[in-house]
Length: 106
Length: 259
Image 1 (cartoon, each protein chain N blue to C red):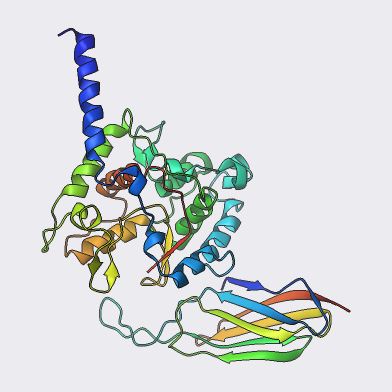
Image 2 (spheres, one colour):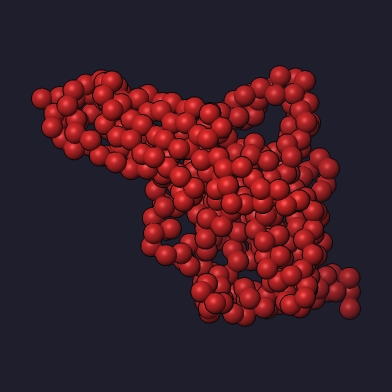
């Protein structure tokens, strides 16, 4: 699962930083049928979580209302230099993860 | 009349014909992005969130990934795509010098794989072919379309124009009925665009994925309840060349975002 994640490389302590996540995923709704009429099983990313130096700062539960290739944007407060770890999992059990580091000054 | 005189007359006639053929004058050309709402336009321009960039990124990886019997990658010959592929997509479809046949950018990539890399062609509309095409075309962003219809391309251009003007399907419509005669007007909730090809491969919300210009043409054919031709049909190629000529000067926007 390809993903694009944007975290500012540098921030000041206490600054509110914008985090953007774009994940390639079909987000199959479970309501569609294939060409011969069989129901296509639901397969969506059902949870996306972001941990900042080990502490969960954001979590989203997704379902079949979300379009393919979901784009998620959220904010967190820059507290310390370190790593943001993003993990997500879909209905078929496929996991994805990405890490990005942030340098916090002041 | 002398032979030279006849030639001059023929050239003059064809120039006059060419001037008349432009149903939309060059200064009135509008990219599909001119028919987008502010939200989709900003999504297309967003260097991070444009979903087509997922394919561009994949294409970037594939560019330097060796494939085929000779264990060569695109980068083995073309090196840095940023400079070697600059403006390339704006010249397609074009005649492939070795075979003398018309090739789209997708077709050219597969020709290269076969000849230089000893690799199997990528299936049309496959994720990998879309990704490499989008990656190559991405380096032509902003470059005005300038496809050549001279020499051996001329027969394809003429066939493409005939295909553009051919009434088809249960609705008995040609491309021209919507995209030349009625662009800018409403068709239910949609504004009819000029049908310009400069954003493809593009991410269409309706598809929820990236798709080629051929896929878009097939969608149009389905919309007018006409028969869809198989991917890679010569008729699509001819039509693509006509569309490229018709869009002359419009900047490439790949990967575009469309409804």
